[in-house]
Image 1 (cartoon, rainbow over the protein chains, first blue to last red):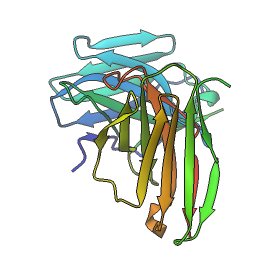
Image 2: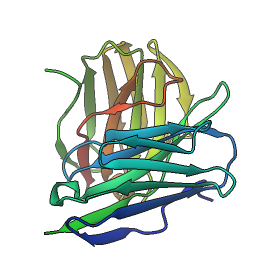
Image 3: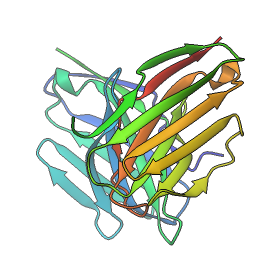
Image 4: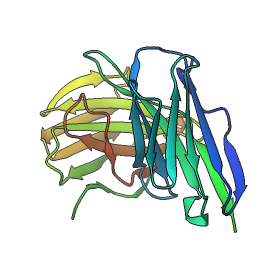
Length: 113
Length: 113
């Protein structure tokens, strides 16, 4: 059973509009949350992160929101640009001594010009 | 070269072949990882090395054999693979094994015939 779920395998948005990517988790033992972005033929690259003591972190066009009670993480991109088209993975880091990243299955974002 | 590099980028092998994947990091990190990404699935952690010692092995079949001769290099030796092992194999490194911020290589696309 997957502990981290990205229920939308794909998302298309118009250039200039907001992209919202979602991630749900079941385990309360995660204490650090990351988003990675992946272009074809490249490895994932780190985008933005948030710790469990915060509910929002903003970096330019990218904002990550964390709702611990709902076990829900989201990434907002505004305004969306065609260069944002990529696969986005959420990755959650478990707390304790055996810290390990658990990835979602990814969402393919396509930003249409 | 900077960052995390992987060779080869693409590999086609028969089920009776033996091959090795190579990963090198130029970041001074102490932890290195092998991940497997199959189509439409989350990244799966295969192996974790910290200071050249294996600290995690997520029940990976013995036909995959990792080797970490020093903190900058990581190998994945492959033998008698199955067609279902065809996937993207990603190497990553981080400052230490408790850090969530992993830097990924570009991956090796493996096809087993």
